[in-house]
Amino acid sequence: MTHARLTTDLRETVIAIAQDAAAAIMQVYASGFDITLKADDSPVTAADLAAHQRIVSGLSRLTPDLPILSEEATAAAWETRRHWGAYWLVDPLDGTREFIKRNGEFSVNIALVYQGAPTFGVVLAPVTGLVWHAMRGEQAYRRQGAHDTVLRTRVPAQSPLRVAASRSHRSARTQALLDRMGDIETVAQGSSLKFCRIAEGDLDVYPRLGPTSEWDTAAGQCVLHAAGGAVLSTATGKPFRYNRRESLLNGDFMALGDTRLAWRDWLPPDEPETA
Image (cartoon, rainbow, N blue to C red; front, top):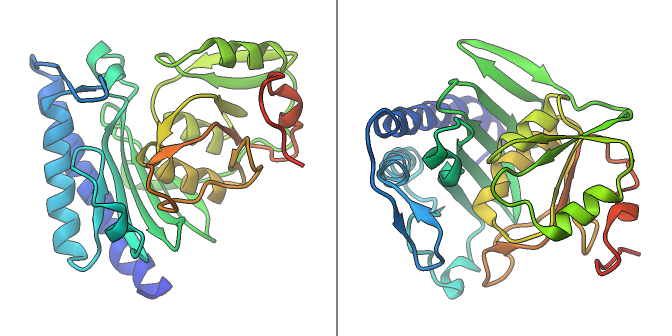
């Protein structure tokens, strides 16, 4: 798959697939829906499953030779996945808890991963219809209607730092980190929209001390990196890589608009610091 083909043939079709999934989500959102719990006690609704079906169907037609790894499907065994050079990494409805709360802060996430790195990412907010998309090595964009706006992070970051704090996952460790950051303004925000708001320059930092899955971060990471920011592992100080081990869980990370921020100084004392 050449870069030119990725640019011209896939981008608009994948955005259209995400929009189709968003339409399915909003049909459920507008009506009553049941909530069930998966084996890990995370919630799932008919909207998650409908979006999954729309995305898998669309991507399978578009690139029949590429595997698809979705939150709402049984993952292929590591012995199979370890040989994937390129694949789609999908969260059909990121922020199911926000969907259930009906606060609008949920998204559709689709990323193309090549050799462990997100090379193309789409994040779509079904309630507003806004689309954030980016290709590795190019610019990041926010699409409203038919218009694309180029995104850049806020550099240099200025005090008070605007810090994204999850509505559903604020832990004691995260609060300890926030307490060490100095002059900040916390902004509650759900799902991968946090990455997008940093990419727009509207927020500066999103710290996550706690588990996420690879499909939660790949598309947002692609958008943020293209806008000038980064998603860095607090353990290594390096950007996340994907499908590099059997587990699909991420470690702790720091999403930054200005990569020069001294984020290691914010880590609570029990956090490992990079060399």
